[in-house]
Image (cartoon, rainbow, N blue to C red; front, top):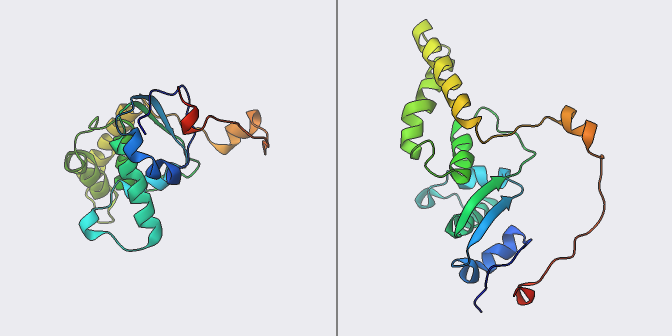
Length: 175
């Protein structure tokens, strides 16, 4: 079954993986990836070293399916913060904006190693200054495409729970 462009498609990650062959050549203008925390670890996994926990395999397959799609723009939504792990942070940044910060190795050399060195207990004053400068540089680069909202801010504008349903088109209903 060959798909043409659908105006809107809402699909779970699990269903997406089953439709990967049909969607691979379908141009997608915007991909909204909810539950972005599922992508942060999968983006960093080297398949030759993949641990065999089922969640890791599922998330890696999801990540591979998403990156195989012909997508112009990607947005990641997550309620799970990235805490003190620059590799996970890079995985999400690189998924949303591939190669914006260079390759994984480039990122590690230009940012991660220097930032972590300055955070080490044995860091010199020079290491700490360089770390702070790199952190500021990284923050400036990613501020162009990251919007962070805390729960305090969101709770002022969002109801605590929203109940409802959305009726969507099935694959066979796409024109």
